[in-house]
Length: 143
Length: 103
Image (cartoon, rainbow over all chains, first blue to last red):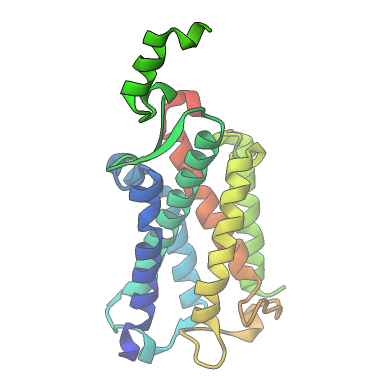
């Protein structure tokens, strides 16, 4: 199982952050084109940095904790790391933005699949309709 | 100065310079961004802490290429600069690709 360690950590990062997309309502995975384009410059720069680090001997990987699949000198895990962690960062950024927006929006907090957390206008409050009408008929609203 | 330390300082400076000089998303002035980074660093400590722990490291470092400060646990302090640059660059690009009114 040791060879799965690094991959397991990356999978855990994706699983733990998944509720940010579908629970809180970050729209990162659902903005596929924007996501891919946002990752490209970072990916190019950090693959270069990572390759430099490996080739210059700044760091290396314990063979017993990685799958053994390599693309050139880079373990598959390290390439996935450079995609997974920035995605987690974007999910966090979008989730924080959503929570800050929800905090200053009036209305009742609701969960709506697949949007996530939303505010709904107060008039949709599920008060018993009968009571409200009854009060109106009695004229008690104007009393 | 050790090479990884130098590259980390260059990485941090390059991202800050790119934002302030060209991208101009205003991200460094937003509460949203700094809250995000606090959360990112908190989780980096757990993930990176596991990757770099000296008792059974997944990633090994040449001590000669580091500043030598490894905190918390055994995380090379440079890793936080690497993470800052990586996540910040992604967020800046993400904002620039988003709806114009949110820039």
